[in-house]
Image 1 (cartoon, one colour):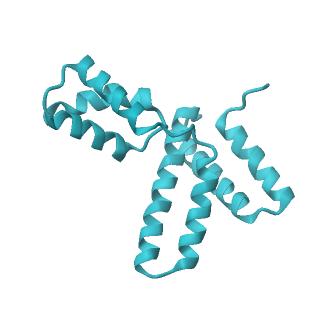
Image 2: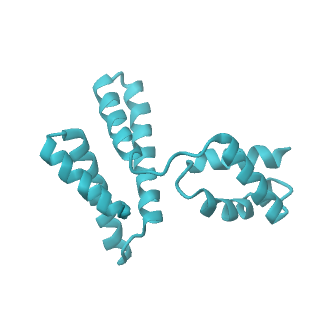
Image 3: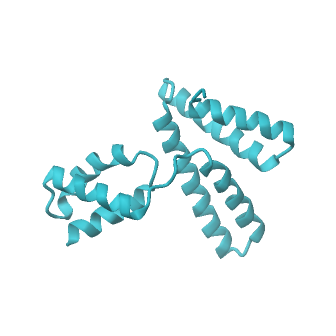
Length: 151
């Protein structure tokens, strides 16, 4: 089996969506590819899979915020649209890490850095983030680290 990079997977998904007439998938993958292209132009470099994953996670975060805003405005149509887009984007991300796995990695990172208090959180995050790489949301990671450092 040939392993495709994430951008190629997104391109293939967009082509499939165009053929099958799946508007949500087509629109979402096209938007993701446009954002990747824009980031590459801005940084004048080609993004690797880790950078693409980071960009996709940011897109999911934006959609979740939009869902919250739509709930406040009582707009069920917008909520459904954003949730459908989240599902499409999540299909391209690595399988999410369980909270137990995340906790174990965080404890290892704390031990590695010798962190003892909240002020050492930056050191821990620096070690932990590459290990978690796209399998957990940043706010979730920092919450676990904060909780463990508070003990």
